[in-house]
Length: 394
Image: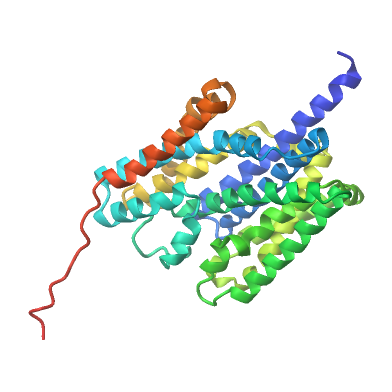
């Protein structure tokens, strides 16, 4: 192989490494937030959203360039193989453990939330239940963190269909995709500003319509039109400014007490994250991209999906007497261990090597898993709710 043939391969590997490093930073932020050490660490979810919007749109645009269309069945099949095995493993393992050792309140919420997780609608279920995201004083819900997975899954369901419609509408595909994604992100921001409730922004924080801009801004950056514009911003200081801005937001943002987040702050953070992603993808040999490609950070990014799935159940089910940094260390150790087992024993084998997970046998396996999960929610008995006899009062 000549040097000219090697170069694209090396660039692609370096680019992927930098984006994996960004995933590692995102999951670190979430871990530190959920263990009480980084007030704005929840913004790691926004970084995940922007990454997902970018990567999925880039993948779909490549498919359109190669084939002239989008195979919805093929796309959704790949998403199912990527996401469902680890999710189903965590759902079954956590539910059984909760049923065996947790309090009746946690058992009830787990069995009630599980079907909505399975349907990728848990964010709307939690809102209907008035389960405020920022409320940490009620009964623990071991699946409440999966609201963000539901938002992404809903995006994966709708966005490829929109791109397919755009393809069939004629020319200027790239410009149309960029324009529609940008306009839709502005509409999403407007909805967030209009619907935010002071004191409890849960509706706009976990609602798909009001969070779509984070994914859509990533989608904008994946287009050739945006990449051409980013070429003019490729100076090293631009990346440093973006990292500094994101770091400041993560340090000072305080969820429910930072109203500015829900009147444009989250949009600004998502925009900065999307531009940073685009710069790392376009210039993989910069100092910033190489730092992000640091092997431990990249490995953390490679297990970030399963780590996100497991970290909150681990944290929620640990005994209350553990606190501070010892608790954080224990949560991280257990969660990383479970995530590594999930990746190497469940995710990768099914995603890359299991022939039965494709075609008709894949459809059968998917149906069997979904049916099995549905049976799980029905078979495990929920404790009866506590009732108080007030007949003798008065």
